[in-house]
Length: 212
Image (cartoon, rainbow, N blue to C red; front, side):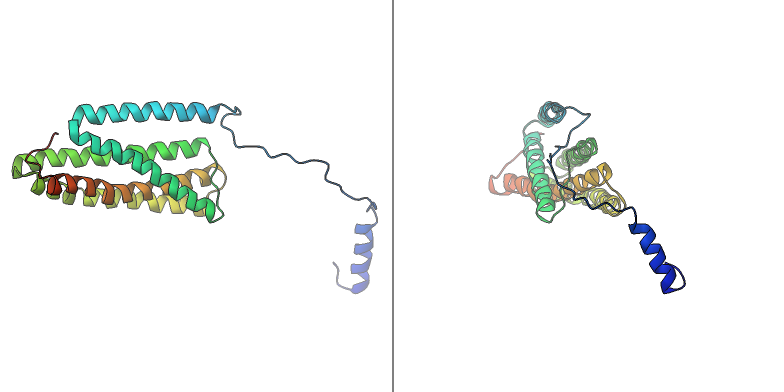
């Protein structure tokens, strides 16, 4: 404000000389909901398209892997449930990701990675059944073989998500939060849900062969 008190007072007088004695009153306020492409129906259109894609993906698993493909179908819906739970935790912690195009892309990406890991698992299971013959041993061998790809893939996604959360804003932040939730949900689902269902099938149901 200047090198002396007198100069600072002169500057303060100049700044306040144009001030008007008027109050600011809030007349109204309006909350604007998040939209995609400026349309109220766009989120619902995206949801409908996503449901169609999920049904097609379920059909592909069942046709390609028969009864074992049902495990992947159940795991997909469990993964979506877990993704919603992780997003809910973000909201509870005070971070609310909006429904944006980047969020939908992140959900689609996490589902593609999830489906790819199950395809890899079932292909290894097919090979292990040929080598081992016993469903229990084949299941254990296949689950162990996919561990490096499982933890490596989801580890990269989680690290990238955290980086984007730190440096990103707006839609990038929304997409990063959704991707982090989807990656964490996928890791939990593959490591616990899929493993548990396959283990129960071969150990507690005493299967002598697997439909795959």
